[in-house]
Length: 105
Image (cartoon, rainbow, N blue to C red; front, side, top):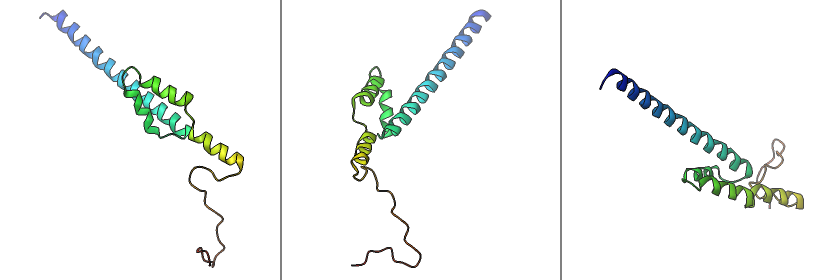
């Protein structure tokens, strides 16, 4: 191998490494974005890992978000009806000092 082919080979190897790092960065960024979207919609953020399924992962995520009933919508509907929210109950009023927090029979 002469000097030109060694230089070309090292340039190609460097470009492959840079390309791989950029691709991994884009995949991690996409998963982070979808994690935040799923969490804000009321779903488990781990559904964003479906993006790792080659070919159809992003399509599956978009279908879930576009056509699925969001847990956030269920909570909003319950609040509009005046019922308790679907999630954990908010803390009640703080009892005054010196009183028991246990209900009396």
